[in-house]
Image 1 (cartoon, helix red, strand yellow):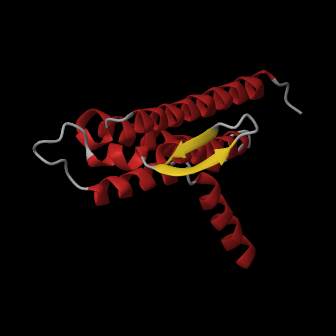
Image 2 (image 1 turned 30 degrees about the vertical axis):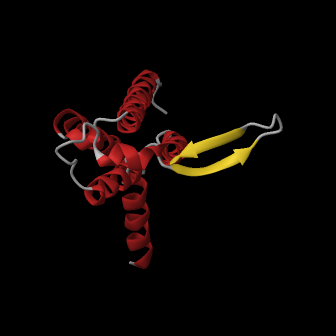
Length: 154
């Protein structure tokens, strides 16, 4: 009984789309950044994302400055790597992950199209990364289906 519960927990964890985490982080920052003032043309969120996270001295003597938007995209790329590796597995959890990833993409697309605070290069690139993961997962799933259909029965 306990083994079955552990298996369900692992399946639930495997089906959770990790790319939802950076989207939620962006949404939380947008929520707390507030609405633009009447005399502002840029949402406050854009200023937050452009804020310097840290800088690294390079051997050339130049400082590499990374802002919060860059850091969020870096986190998204790391999660994308984990998601692509996870999407090579077979089973119901990979299909659930694919469907949930496409739901995250729809959420991102609606936000970028309808909400002024989400019109930024950072969120647009985050949305495209989510879309690319969904398309990658779909192509891997379709290739697996074709391979399974072409394989002779054992």
